[in-house]
Amino acid sequence: MALRTVVWTLLLAASTAAFAALEEGDRAPAIDATASLAGRPYAYSLKESLAKGPVVVYFYPSAFTVGCNIQAHEFSTRAEQFAAAGASVIGVSLDSIDRLNEFSADPAYCAGKLAVASDPGGRTARAFGLRVADVRSGATDTRGQEIDHGFAERTTFVIRRDGTVGAVIGGVSPEANVTRALETVQKLSAAR
Image (cartoon, rainbow, N blue to C red):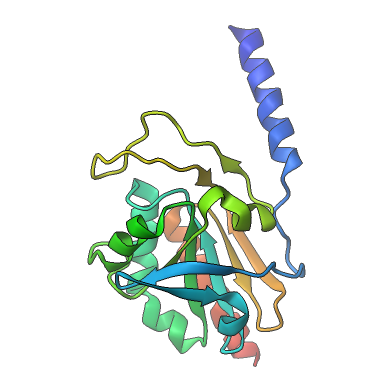
């Protein structure tokens, strides 16, 4: 049993080392995806959003799961604060656009104030250097519905207007993730 634990720990460490999230100062990859806002799909472009101000790109495992529900709710309730700092926010997951249409309109989570983009297969998450786990057999969301996609690790990138990463936020609670992202964009706003 102890040997199995040691082997599992080493494998996990090796797989973690294989992925290195982008770091502050790195150029962010392009994001051109189908997104949803208030239940309506649209074509999202990171380049177009950056023309208006900094962008908070937050990757999350799956819509309608406990941590993701909390994080989406926190971003939506603070949407005006992000806008006041000149920043926009886009959530990215491997969910289908149909699931995201529901999630983006749900008054308990995105509440029509937070856009979320579909990254089927995790290509965008991997371009940002994030780990993408395979779909877990039998996984269900908080509504009891089956989750039929993989999971990107919860990590937030604050992208400056010039397309470079201004901050990387991970390894904290969903609430702390949102708070740190807001603090970062407020500092960027104050520095203008």
